Image (tube, rainbow, N blue to C red; front, side):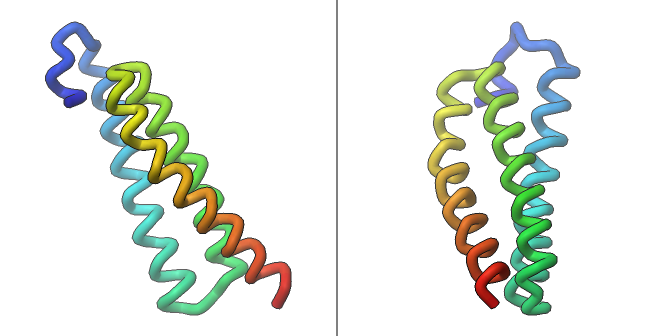
Length: 93
């Protein structure tokens, strides 16, 4: 959807793609840190960063194509919940 926006500057599309790929890699990193290494403290830092980059990605998508940005909102909601749970586990243990 994003790359069909012919009137959008290539640099803006590239920035959105880089931020999107960064949020995907942070999500994978969080899975490894939290579940693989079982480090909820480090996981909390990673998932907080992941959430921030995810929100930035959704915002960039929104500026290019409003519907694409809206499609990111359920993921933002889920990662918000996961972030709260991760911090809760870390702070209560």
